[in-house]
Length: 255
View 1 (cartoon, helix red, strand yellow):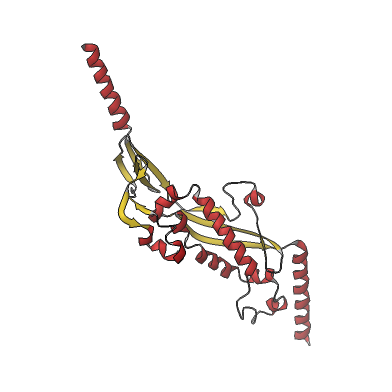
View 2 (spheres, one colour):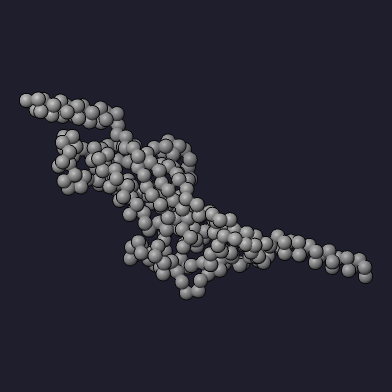
């Protein structure tokens, strides 16, 4: 009888230790958490991402595809408790910065994440350098945790695709070269147009990627393209054109 009682007390002690003490958890300040029960996340009944502001940037044909359920988000703090059949997913919501050439699935791609290549409208292979700031969308944690396997890979792929399309079709805004004689001297050269309008290019990419939070649960905070490097022969040709233009302008002023 005493042996049986020992087993019972030992079992109760193990249960309390395993599922009582170890079932307590906390959430850090830069984290948010989602809890599941038997693999199913606790949801906000009747609500999807289409009811949130992040869905405003989705196209009409995309809305049904990205109608993820809203989940109950556990805020920073604690202690919280979970049952043995429950699991807690913690996510950092701090802002991250990566190179725009970063490939999450193949680290050696794009010269080990240093240079992203794109083709301009006049068929020049151009190298681009810059950074992307992003953070996990607290409003759409379901998409980030359960919607896609590697959200950052999807976001980077979407960003690179949109950027390459923009580079391939980029034209300087009307009148952009009218007040700039140096720019006018090389008007029609896509590399020069891109360099003169990098701010417009960055702003366009920010707008183009506004839907990423609704698609993948990752919000692009800012895009910063810092360098556009043409092939060496094009670079030298542009330098020669600018030098010649400056010489002509100097001679005209002297005359």
